Length: 89
Image (cartoon, rainbow, N blue to C red; front, side, top):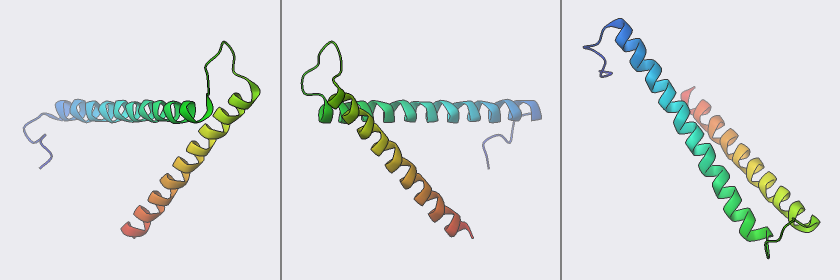
């Protein structure tokens, strides 16, 4: 049972649309949490003392740190996707 058995077709469509909207919002929240995590880790790693401007070394460190996180996340995501696809075949 999907929990929608007692609903009309239009109510089912609305419920399905609501579920999709919730899923999108959850993905946005996960993305924001990941950005927050990048910020925390990379800030702690790269910024010695905050100033009015980022020096070249700090800026380069921050960019490299975030790029490593993104590359790692994409690699892990791709690996899980491959594992799921192999499991469904």
